[in-house]
Amino acid sequence: DADVTQTPRNRITKTGKRIMLECSQTKGHDRMYWYRQDPGLGLRLIYYSFDVKDINKGEISDGYSVSRQAQAKFSLSLESAIPNQTALYFCATRQLNTGELFFGEGSRLTVL
Amino acid sequence: AQSVAQPEDQVNVAEGNPLTVKCTYSVSGNPYLFWYVQYPNRGLQFLLKYITGDNLVKGSYGFEAEFNKSQTSFHLKKPSALVSDSALYFCAVAEGATNKLIFGTGTLLAVQP
Image 1 (cartoon, each protein chain N blue to C red):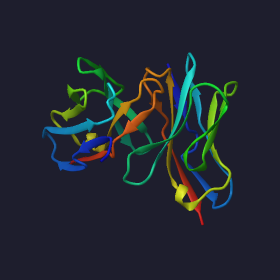
Image 2 (image 1 turned 45 degrees about the vertical axis):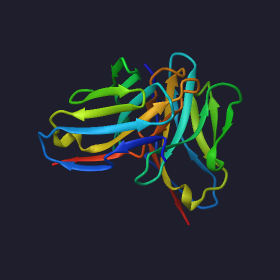
Image 3 (image 1 turned 60 degrees about the vertical axis):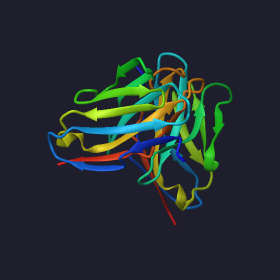
Image 4 (image 1 turned 60 degrees about the horizontal axis):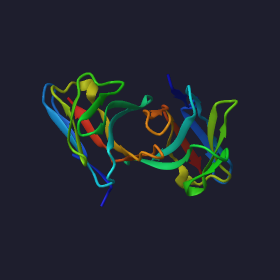
């Protein structure tokens, strides 16, 4: 089983719909992250969480919200999806002493 | 503010030839530097990291990277490229283990048989 699991892996939705992307981990790491990948732009940080009660905005948080339901779960929501939120989304956990990130397989979201 | 640059969108190399993927960075303090690889339809996989110690870091799949403080560079290298090395490579930097990890825009490596 993967250490960092994302669901769904693929989703097509329409403008204005609410979407939730879920992430769960078995690494036991406190720190979790949501990134967005767009061609030519690399990975951009949306939100990150240092523990259940500590949520922080990243570079591009507008239009997104997150929930840290437990140490192992960190979900990303799009309250009203728009086409320019079409992208590949990655969840990651971080090992504290080395700073290394461990990524999920990604969730490809298409907003029509 | 910390930043990282990958000046090449794509690198083409023939199989068996050495390869270099370039990365330069900017941080205020001591850098934590990483290379990740992404194969099609997959998440990012860790290749190697530099935190402290020897400037030449060895990683997975025969890759290595050289930390050059004076040039603020952390170029990824491999002595002999394989077709299976073809993928998207990302450099990333953080100011310490706990600060945000900032990624470059990625370099597509294409190895021709």
